[in-house]
Amino acid sequence: MALNCSTFSRLILGAQAAAEACTKRAVLQTCGRYRACRWYSGVTHEENRLEQVGELVVPGSHRRVLKDVLPFSAFLTDSFERRHNYLRISLTEKCNLRCQYCMPQEGVTLTPRSHLLTAEELLMLARLFVREGVNKIRLTGGEPLIRPDVLHIIAELRKLEGLKTIAVTTNGMNLTRLLPSLKKAGVNLLNISLDTLVPAKFEFITRRKGFHKVMEGIEKAIEMGYNPVKVNCVVMRGLNEDELIDFVSLTERKPLDVRFIEYMPFDGNRWNFKMMVSYQEMLDCLKQKWPNLEPAPGEETDTAKAFRVPGFRGQLGFITSMSEHFCGSCNRLRITADGNLKVCLFGNSEVSLRDCLRSGATEEELLHIIGAAVGRKKKQHAGMFNISQMKNRPMILIGG
Image 1 (tube, helix red, strand yellow):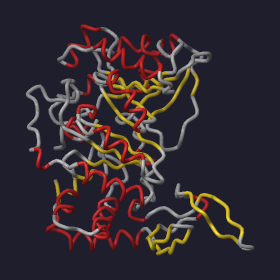
Image 2 (cartoon, rainbow, N blue to C red):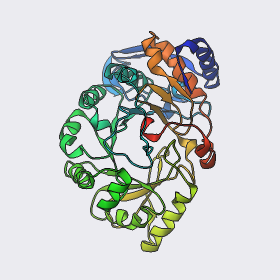
Image 3 (cartoon, rainbow, N blue to C red):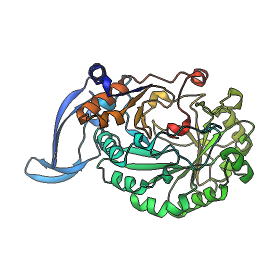
Image 4 (cartoon, rainbow, N blue to C red):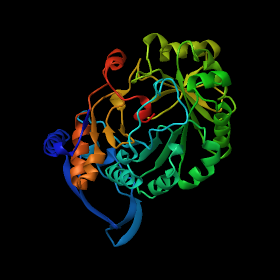
């Protein structure tokens, strides 16, 4: 359900209520060349850091460069005190593959080009989110690398002060050709989708040829110094669960982080519980081969449960969205290619930031709309069986 700017008044009222719940307060910032009045949630200075560096005048007229320590924006803090510093932006609905779990067999109706976010609109929203505390942006699709202006968008994102990480999730088909330019533009993290190591099976899953192009892209990323190179593998019973050991074996000599993803329900992917291989089942299978498999360190907001085989160069992980959700530590928001804000991957509530932009909303009004949406974010998703019955976009129209 998308909301447009005809609902401004109601949303702003909702945002004000959400803001009260977050106990936000105004802070006048003065740090070298930075000076602004912004709203923040009521947390300690030590808990959050704004990654801007500027000159600060200290007693005795000494000047020194340091990080400005500030509380986190209330607009990006939900009612459960989850702070959303990670934004996923879908650049396109188009893709040069047709993966079964992502693209419905009958295809999808693409949004008219005029209804998609322009580069200028996308960058305006990115600047707004980064200013409020987002320090990681991931570009997704569809397939983001088929968007003609992708390098321009990345180069402009790299100019945003406070943005530490620009990541790209790609199917790898165009990666070998584009990777030198991507790295020069500022991409510092890569996720490459690969669900099988068998060429014929690759063609069956993706409904296209291209296995060797993807493998070349992975090798090129390693060659160019990306470490780790993340490989995303959606595990489906009867299709590729027999390849778990082969995937983990790749991490012995290569700096790969292979992430096994539980099969998730989206519109048109014909999800079936019997096809889902749970995290625990996958882990048990791998421990039969490597009994000394051990947990690997990670961040609180990581989506994957990380493990490593002692002595192996890389590692592996499990994204357990269905069997053991990680909603409590979720720090992610999504903007679809047509400009809708989704606060939960599995939720069907959306807010059209595109419509707000095009009807002349000010930055302050946009922030209230965003804050209201974030404030309505639920504690956790509805569970895999309920999700499978809910109306939601196909994965390709969300941003994989």
